[in-house]
Image (cartoon, rainbow, N blue to C red; front, side, top):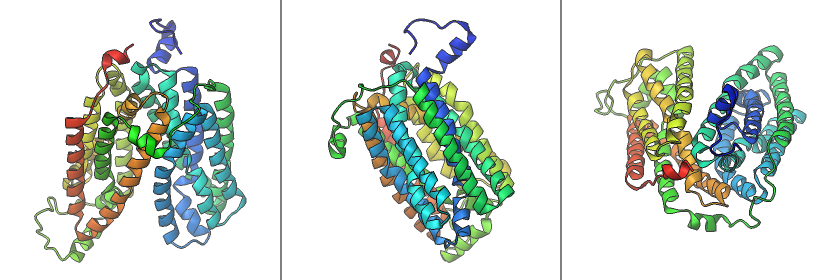
Length: 433
């Protein structure tokens, strides 16, 4: 860690100081790129691989549901183990868990093996997030927390963008079954490389972790009021995000599907909720461009917002993020055609405006000593509750698509108001110390 008050020499030293690139942070980022690249190589193609191995079309849907559930359930054990063992040893264990999953898929070419293996290799992101936040909070001073989380979020986008591209090349070259297994093989190699890099670069925190960690219910009762209020508002805002999530591509690409849905609801075409009755369908390429616009927007705001949030208060940036979440379903509902969808997807990218700031605020509000465990409790509760929104969105879509967008906006507004009225902030003077 840099000596407080000492200005690093040279342009590279100043850049390293500005971005909070301490040795352990660099080791973490290397691991994020390597493991993330391995994770994303075959992830998008698993449904195709399952069907190629003889699974029915229902199985990929069940795997998606399992992924959502595991993301919630893994959060608490990830946080608890990090608090108990320290972030370096915890990350080592989580890496080995993912490698075991890859090994199953590589050795046993059958769809049940993929399902069992996915229980392990899909664990990485959820298990490692509390350890990542704990590492950032310990290695960097408080006035660099948001920058550290933002750099992590930005670097995570590299494998998210490159992984599916490389995986697609594997499948085009060697076919679905061989290509996906080779992709998993490369994922295992990258995971092993990350494991070695982690052990070399991340400074050991042995002895810093407390010996005894409270259980889930005790941690839940001990959650500070400010963190509870953030959790309530976050749940409501995530309902806003997840209610229409599965139908965004359908709404933008296939207006005929919406017409069928409206006809099935027995509602008249002049139903007052409709707005622009249906958006003109965009092509798959145009939808890909819209997704790219969303990602680029998110990348552009990470660093400037982190710099500002670390020097002022965090609450306004989180509040702006919640407003962007709330406005997106309404904007998407009323948009018609590619030209109008461009600003809508820019708005969707701006939902990342204060997301790293929100994670940094969780770290600031969580009690010292049990920060990772409390982080895991937060995400377990949030994601378990929010997983119900997918069912609600599916039901409402059958009644009328407009209901989904309206309820999403109502949930977002409720969460935004809750945080505006009850949410607490951190003291900028304390952060700067």
